[in-house]
Image (cartoon, rainbow, N blue to C red; front, top):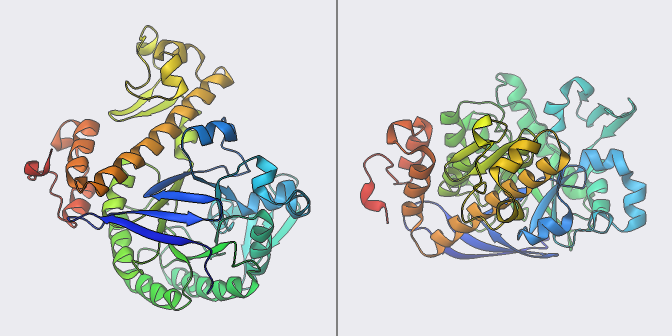
Length: 399
């Protein structure tokens, strides 16, 4: 099918499956690997579009289901799309709304036609079909649009998983047919199949035949065992076309990002950085700081030394302790910091790949985060060993 993107691989890690690339979209270039902050309803909670842009963000997410409810398609059409509506001049990726089948399951009824939701706002019914999802995303004007897929929890087993996989393939065909703007908007397929390697392989074989501009690994980050999670990711990146961008949906913990880049993933998203900020948790290279704790009441250091975000340049841990979870500015400042941390992490990963020192970066990252090797999660050790990085015995890889 037609594509409105350009994917240029600049460097490949000589040890792992990681690569650095530039993804050129209608609203500008995106440096990959990339973490995409999530502005579900047209805004990152607690951060203005200008502030997000100032942090160097090149692409963020909106959610089709939520924007379809509010402000609604008619208003989006009237104002010329979501970029104009929210004052965001860089790239947007829209989730199709499929994930709400899991997150709002009590409000959803799934059939071959589509998904009928009960609005959490006013109780009204909304039927989201592949055709309606495409129409909404065309109105939103997202640079990358996700197909509507049949999403089941990663903990689901049995025939429902295979049913969802085959339905996602059929729905992809309907999405392709209904997509009205392939010259300016890119439709990505979403690989389903649960934790079953046979189903994942079959889904990839079928969806690759559709030749979409990019592919996503869906149906993970739902509470499954991490050892199963990484094996599915690695299997998918081995089988998916390497000449196209690969997106792992819903991944946002720092250690997950580092591991999944090593396994060959290029794009990530998650609400985690801003959601955890609302509980007073600040992300740092040595772990999460719970700034609600009294030990920070007379700590006059920034959240993290060397961070150039406004929260770290202008405020102390002691100040944030006094206002966090009590004043909205506390959430605002920690949200800015956490977003800055995620974007900086991806820049550092990318630079290390280009300079072919990513394995050394991995060693330092996990040493800083966990200090002792005995604290390294077993799944991390196993995943990285599968791509020739030995965290336990491989000290010679360190810089």
